[in-house]
Image (cartoon, rainbow, N blue to C red; front, side):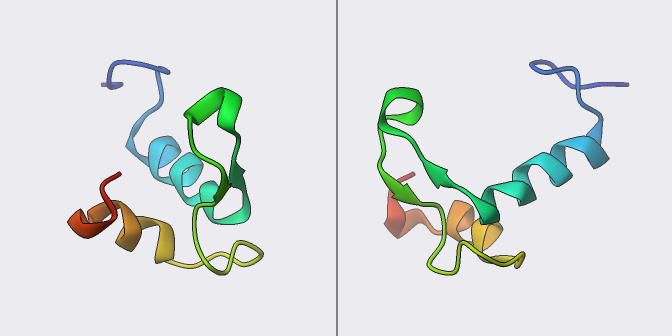
Length: 58
């Protein structure tokens, strides 16, 4: 069963979210400017930890 939205399954969703470690935000697309993580040139769990950090107000 695929979740709503982009029609990704769970594995695909986790993969595409993890790819955010390698990118940065674009103001015209997200309203934010800058990298998603402090080390945006390597795969890590930092993006997921940031998503769960309530103090970041994402």
